Amino acid sequence: MEPHRSPEETVDAPELGRAERAPPQSAAPVSSAAPAAGEDLSDRWAEVQTALQGLIQREQFETWFRRANLRNVSERQACLAVQNAFTRDWLAKHYIGSIERAVAGVFGRELEIVFVVDAELVGERRPRTSGADTGDPARPSNAVQHAVQTEPPAPARGESRLMWASDVPLNPQYRFDSFVVGPCNRFAHAASLGVSENPGKNYNPYFLHGSNGLGKTHLLQSLCYSLLERAPHTRILYLSCETFVNHFISALTDGNLDTFRNKYRNVDVLVVDDIHVLANKERTQEEFFHTFNTLYNAGKQIVLSSDTSPKEIPTLQERLVSRFKWGLVTEIERPCYETRMAILKRKSRERGRELPDDVARLLAEHIDTNIRELEGAVTRLQGYAALSGQALTPELATRVLRDVFSQSRGLLTMEEILRVVTAHFNTKLSELQTKRRSNAVVFPRQIGMYLIRKSTRHSLEEIGGFFGGRDHSTVLYAIERIEAQMAADPRTKELVAGFLNQLRR
Image 1 (cartoon, one colour):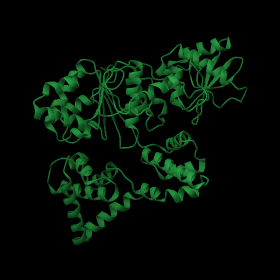
Image 2 (tube, rainbow, N blue to C red; image 1 turned 30 degrees about the vertical axis):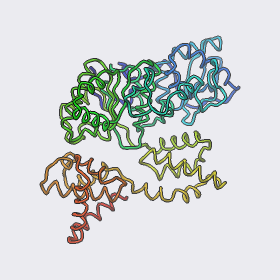
Image 3 (cartoon, one colour; image 1 turned 180 degrees about the vertical axis):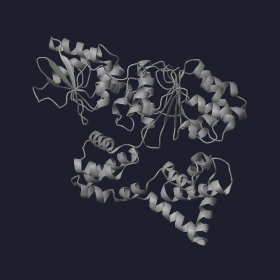
Image 4 (cartoon, rainbow, N blue to C red; image 1 turned 90 degrees about the vertical axis):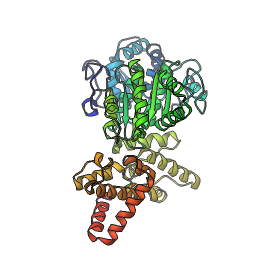
C-alpha cells in the first residue's frame, strides 16, 4: 500500500502509479512556439488517429487524443498540438512510442515528435473508423455516441451499466475529455484517471473533496464511465451517503440487515457522494466501517466525495478518518482566472456561440467561486442575446448579469467565513462543530451562523448540518441571539459590522 501523499507533494507528478516523477527529457521535446502553418493535415491526422486506435485502448484514445491535432510535419519532425501542459507531459511519458509508430506508419518514415500547447484547441477531425462521424469536431465518434444514446435516463439493471440499486444516473456529458483541467484541479483529474485505469490497487480508497460546484461530480462520473468502457461487466454501486443512511435505517427497521450488507458488500466499485453526511450518525458509521473493511480487504475500489477533508468531518470516528486517508485524499480548489477563461470559452463554444474575449474576461473577473455559476451565466447571456438579436458585448453582459455580478462578490463559502471568525477568536473550526457549550465556543459559533446566513444562500438546515449536525431551530436561535445582542450592545454590533466589511472586500 502506498503512503498517502498530499496534492502539494504530487501535483507535479501526473504519472500516477509510476516511480519516475517527470517524463524523460529525450522522449519528446517541447516546442516553444507553434510551427508555421503548412498544408492541411487533417486527413493525415485522421489516419494517424486511426492507427493509434489500433495501438491503445479506446478510453485512452478518447481521453488523450480527441482534442490533439497535427500542426506541422517537416522532414525530421511532426508537431502535435495539445490542450494543456499536463496532457503534453502525459503523452510524452506514456504514449510517445505509440505516437511515433502511428506517425511512421502514415508518413512512411520515422519522425521526432514535438508538442505545442494550445489552450483553446478543439480536434478538427475524427479518426476514420467504420461508421465514424467525422464532420462534427465537437461530437464524439458514433461508437461513443451510441453508448451515450443507449444509456437510459435512469440506471437500469444490466452488467454494463451502474448497478440497479444506484441512485445517481450517469450524465453522458461528464467525461474526462470534457473536463477543463487547470492548476486548481489538475491533481484531482490525474488521480481520478489513475483510479479508473487501475481500480482497487494504488489509490484505494480515493477521497475527493472540495466546495460545491467545482467539478467533483464530473470527475466521479468520468471515473465510472471510464471503468465501464474498459470493463463493461464492472459492478459499480454509485449513490449518495443519504441513500446509504436511509437504506440502513430501513434495514434496521425491517430486520433485513443481511440483505442490506449483501447489496453493499458484493460490488467491484462503491462510489459514495457526500460522505460527510455520516456526521453524528454513530450506528451508521459503525456499519459503514465494516462495509469499508469488507470491500477493502477484497481489493474492491472505494471512491468517496465530501465537502471537506476526512479530518474536518465533525464527529466522524477516528478509525474511519484513518481509513479514509489510507489511499489518496485530494482536493478540488476554486478555479483560477485562466481556468475560468478556459471554461467560459469551452462552454460557450459547446453551446454554439463562443464568447468574445472581452466578454469572457468580464465574466471570469466577476464570477470566481463556482463553475456552475459560470455555466449558468453563459447560458443566460447567450439565450438573451439570441432572443433579442443583440451582439455579445461587455455592456450587454453587465446589464443581463447585473444581479449575478453583485451577488458573486458577496457569495462566500462557509469555510471562508469561518476562517475569518476562527482567526479573530483564536479558535478552531473543529471546536465550533463540537457539542461544547462554553462561552468561548458558543459565541464564535453563533457569530459564524449569523454571518453565514447573512452572506450566503445556505438554508438553516445546511448551516446546522455544517456545525456538527445541528437542526435548523438551533441556527435560528443563534441568529436571533446575535441580533438581540447587536441591538443591546454597540460593541457586538461593531464587531459584526467589521466582520461583514472584511468579508465583502
